[in-house]
Image 1: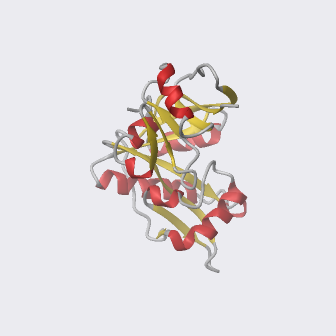
Image 2: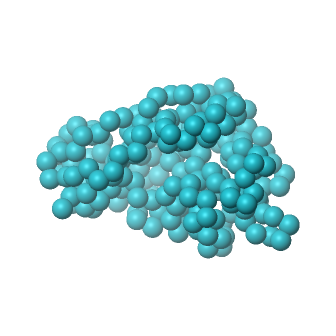
Amino acid sequence: MLNNPVWAALDGPQACFAEAAGDAARYHPDIAPFGALRDNADPAAWRDLATITDVAVLVGRAIAPQAGWQTEQVLPGVQMIGQSMTGVEDPDAVALTEADVPEMLDLVARAQPGPFRKRTVDMGRHLGIRDNNGRLVAMAGERFRMPGWTEVSAVCTDPEFRGQGLGARLTLAVAAGILARGELPFLHVLQDNENAIRLYERLGFEHSGEVVFTSFRKP
């Protein structure tokens, strides 16, 4: 499942968020830009994908497009798993809900953690930390969820508040909730984000393998 996490999520616990056709699926565009194929090497699955979208971001090991599709962007990343880590709840973390989405989107615009849309919050538990004025300055949450595993994602901190360990605290708090359900946390980080990789290693995450985020378009 970790080799094809989006398919495992959309064909499993997050099927309620899927637009699917045959051996292809994608999240509703308001939720996330990611799509998936049961088998990335199957031309029929690519034809199924073309019936539901003409653009998608696929996640997994190296992915070569089939006829009719073009590669637009390839972002190398690292997958990390928390099989032996311990999560820590944070007393300052507050649950974020649909009512907080405008603030969450504003924080995403400042911190640039990666794709986050107006219904991304529906994918799982999200936690945030506010400053003394009540402004949301850091957050983290759950994204891909598949049997036995849930991804930690959207870890970001306002640039003015970086260096205070807020991202680490929220990562551990989100992981604590995942572990409490009897699941294991995992995450993805861009390969060139060495500072984040070192942070996640200190928190107890271990390297699982390389992964690529590849954007495809069908003209």
